[in-house]
Image 1 (spheres, rainbow, N blue to C red):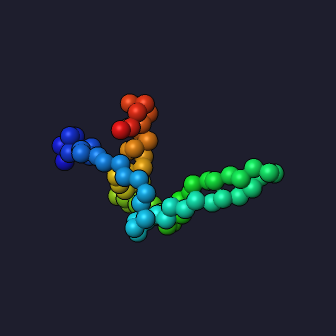
Image 2 (image 1 turned 45 degrees about the vertical axis):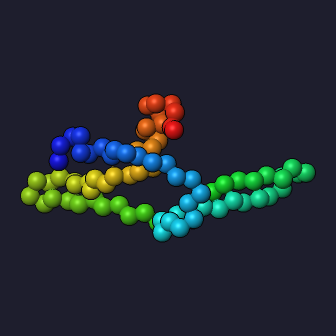
Image 3 (image 1 turned 30 degrees about the vertical axis):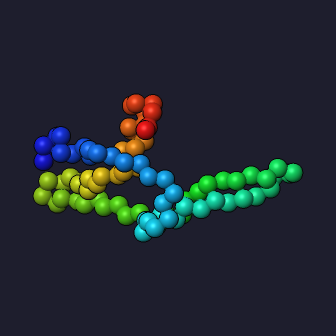
Length: 83
């Protein structure tokens, strides 16, 4: 795979996701003292990680996966702005 193929292109950010099979956005409301607080949160599935051991080479092999959330975080830090 060429290096340019490793990074995504035409990235879009969507808000108000309600039909994802991976996450469930929610808003929690609670009171702290006399103040009403709204807190946005996301419920998610457990993640899976894969670590393999190559007996002949005596090496650990980590499975490389594209992580959209990590990509977005790196993009935000590099440009200081997401549009």
